[in-house]
Structures are given as structure tokens and as C-alpha cells.
Amino acid sequence: MNFIFFSPHFPAYNAEFCYHLSLNGVRVLGIGDTPYDALSEKLRASLTEYYRVGDMEDDDEVIRAVGYFIHQYGKIDRFESLNEHWLELEARIRTDFNIYGTKLDFIDNLKQKSRMKDYFNRSGVATVAHLKSSDKASAQAFIDQVGYPIVVKPDLGSGASMTYKISTAREFDSFFSNKPSDISFILEEYVDGIILTYDGLIDRYGNVEFATSHRFEQSIMEVVNTDSHLYYFCLPSIDPEVEEAGRNILKAMDIRERFFHIELFKRKRDGKIIALEVNMRPPGAWMTDAINYTHDMDVCREWAGMVALNRVGGPFPGKYFTGYASRKHRLDYKYTHHEIVGRWHEKLVKYQEVETVFRRAMGDFAYQFRSEDLDEVREIVAFIQETKV
Image (cartoon, rainbow, N blue to C red; front, side):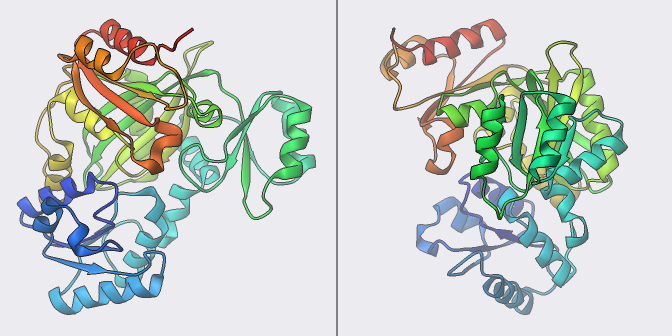
């Protein structure tokens, strides 16, 4: 198998995916903009060859790189980055060179939040009321129907960038007076609830081979907009309603041979599961690590085995609750780093600075820890994030 890994150097855990592909006998070919000598030793050892481009956004450069690899090694079997940012470029390359995987005719369904909702409806999973419109009069009519608050977000894009909660007519007027004219926004009914994810691996025949779930009790939108710290948990078991909803969405979208990361609300007032969005990639930041710590597995290895051999090991039962708690340098915390490590060293599995690009949402410095007891994990979160009075 000839596998072109686009951006193998970022995020850093991509090196693990390349490594395990190579162990499965895959010829891994890298395209990136980082000098070869700056790649990690493990990544360099995993790549058969690396093609450096000056600008990864330059389609012509990328096409030349793919053409070079075809000339050198023959037919390309896969072209992947496992990164939301490159979804459209990946689809374009696969379409142009007839490479297996999602093509351009489907990619908008994975990029546009408004298009996702059509598939939620097909799957039978409830979704939030929404309006795709940049017209103020239509937006006002939508608010008259659903009431305040509402959420506005770009139709294209991932994460909580440029996502806002609007609670008053004054905030509504301010948004429409200042919003960028070149970005298409959607308006959504606000849901008061927690986010439960459905994450895992689906094989080339559409079988879910592994699944797990994360629980977010904070709004990422609020974390980003208030520059606050974040916490979440990877759970050892999946809410049956989350499992059913996630599988129905995957079936409706006919997803094959992918990581999946589906975000669902569990509404507080009635416990109803409501679909939020779908991402066909590993869950972001440290969530991939959390999966490994919760299930005592290596999900990078299992993904590589699925791609190379259509085989996933296991089963991998959940053994722990794995928590994530970040801190912001701007906040004055009660306990020092040394006190945290001294108190919880037996439970800590990782702590370090967060990569700069993720800091607005994920914090400046973070800790990861696990326990068989959810109450203990919550206690660790409270200890890490307690601020001085």
C-alpha cells in the first residue's frame, strides 16, 4: 500500500500514525512544509520518503508532490492528513488522482454544518433548529420563533472560533453590524446541556470496530470567548442513547474507513440526545491520548491496522475515567504545579504546555489523569483549577 500522509509533522501525534502504518508494511510518503531535519526521529524513520513544499495551501505544489510520488512508487492507495483543516484539499487530490476515500462530491457534507443537519434528519436523530442566513430580517424571524438565546457560528469551520451566544436584541444588532461580510453564518437554537461525544473507528465495510465517549460539562464556546480553563472526561462506557445516535448518523452518512468524532448534546431539562456536528478525524488535542489511557490500548496502532489490513484488535473495555484539566497563565491558582504533582502523582499520566495553536480552547498548560472512580477524577479537576480568593 502506498499511503501519502499530508502534514505528518502536525499535530505531533501524527508521527504515531505514520509509525504504525510503517509497522504494518505500508509505504508511508510524507508531504509537509517543515524541513526534513526538523522532523522527529521517529517520524523520519517511519517515512519512506518526504517531499517538502513551500506552501501547503498551494494546490499546484501539492499536485506536483503527488505526481512525483506516483512516478516513483506507482498508484497511490490513500491520501490522508487526519486533520479537519485539510478536508477539502484531501478530497480534491483523491478526486483528481482517483484515490480511495471521500471525494469532492461529498466533502461539503462534512464541512458545512447546515449540510450535516440534513443527514441528522435522515438518521432519525434530533438536531437543533437552525437557519442558514446572513439576512437580518430572516434572522429576526428565526429568533421570534425560537426565542433568545441563540448561537451563531460559521457554517464552515471547526472548533468554537467566531462562535457566539446572543442573548439580547442589543447583542443581535451588534453582531449584524460587525460580522464579516465574507463569512456565511448559521443561527441555532441554544441548547442547555452537556456534550457527549461518540468517537471511534469504522472500517471500509461500514462496521464500527471501536467506540468510546467523552463528556464535556462546559461550553467550549464559553471557554473560548471568556478565555477560561477547560476540563472534560473520557468515559469507560458509552450512554446507550449516544451509541444508538452515533451509529445511526454514521449509517446515514455511509462513512467508511475513518476515525469519527460526533458531538451530541444531552439536554438538561429532559435528557434528550440532540446531534450537534460530525468530524471525520481523531478527536482533537489530548482526547486521542485519553482514549488510550481509558482503554489501555493504542488507538493509533488500531487505526493503522484497520487501514492496512481492515483489522482492529480488541475488545478494549473501558477501565478508567480519564480526566483533562487545563490552566490559564492569566489566572492565579491556589495550588502550584509542584503541589499538584505531589498530591496526585499516582493518578497523573501526562502534564505539559499545550501547543500554541490549541491554547485558546484547551488552556496554556494541562494535566491528564485517570482513576476508576469518577468522583476522584472530579476532585483532581477541582484541585488543579481552584483559584485564589
